[in-house]
Amino acid sequence: MLFKFKSKATSDLIMLEPDARVLLKMMLGDDPVKGIVLAKDLPATIAKLESALAQESAHDALAKDRVQETTSGSDNPDDGPLVEAVLFSQRAAPMLQTLKRCMAENADLVWGV
Image (cartoon, rainbow, N blue to C red; front, top):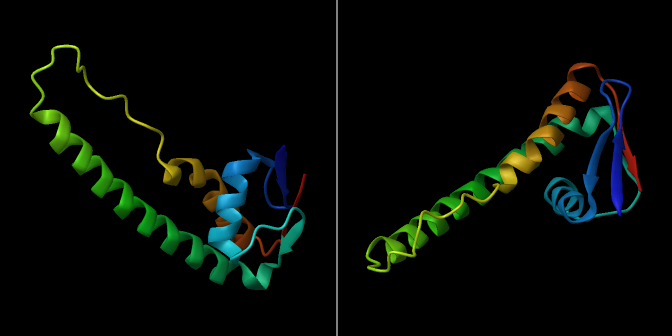
């Protein structure tokens, strides 16, 4: 399932359901299938999302350090370099940009499936 986020200030933002639900939980505390963030609530919503992403980034950095520690001592020649995963903060960047643009233009953000 896809989530489609719409605003008068931006083009549509389409996200896969798992990522959209995580973002909605970060922003709102729940993940409704349909909803709206009013223009007056955008500053608080952006602050919540940025805070949650900062915590997520710190968690990702710790996990990455642990993986590097456990693989750096490996003598197995088949242990090649690890492929970097896409961080959730990278997946969230379009949403954060959309929210900031909506705030700048005093526009609501609505979504549905």
